[in-house]
Length: 350
Image 1 (tube, rainbow, N blue to C red):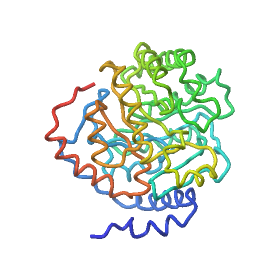
Image 2: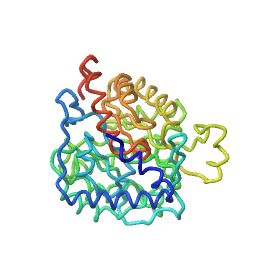
Image 3: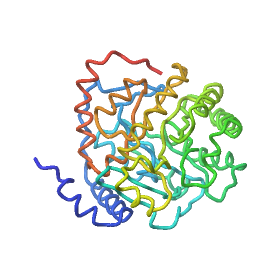
């Protein structure tokens, strides 16, 4: 049976990247009006992590479904979890267009969306209609016009609305497209942010809900070590590594002029894999099993997922590969993982 997405992809890729994205979401919303069958996932694919049971180790990374619009569709594809967002407390349009670019020959996307968000109130209301049987995480960020010193107020405002409607929360302090956001990764800024969020979690009676931190791939090794110690000592539940990169050297030389002409933005996709894995391995080495880690960045195959799990990650997330390979990718990865999950030794449960 021919892969329908591969047949229509040349037509879709004739469109501006953001217009194609909006068209795909319109089509996905239309598909959700009809009954969608649950994927048939074998029990041996299930993973226990963060006190939750994931039907598959493969999840959808934050950034694609910012407003929790297509949760039934993601579930039907076979994702074990979906991370919605990034959600900001107040609505904001994001950066001016064009702000999304594709490099199909390398499986790379550049985005500088800038946390375009409907706002936490709208997204929280939509989450109340979420499908059962799907782990959903909420990825939170601050508004662009909020000063760094007031970031905690933004994260707490979004948390109050989103946290009661999801299974876990991820704090995004690593997007390169909101000025100053990555400064929140420094230990001096990170300690009070994590402490404040954990206090709020306790206040709302959500102590059992995992609170994760998503990090950038552009940090120096010694910075990763320092952040690891802050994260462990804070009492949060785990790390996600990594977000997109500003390092344009992940693009081949022949395409670097084209990417530079697009301007600044976060790069994701195949070219990020090696850089993201290096960060992942350093963090896992520093963590020494004290906290679980979710792998993200350059993942787009069963081999990449299996490699991340073998490295020590508890889960893996993808996004960019789905744009280039289409919805059948998820089922294919799950199918190919079945054998490796049977033969791999059991992993520690967090």
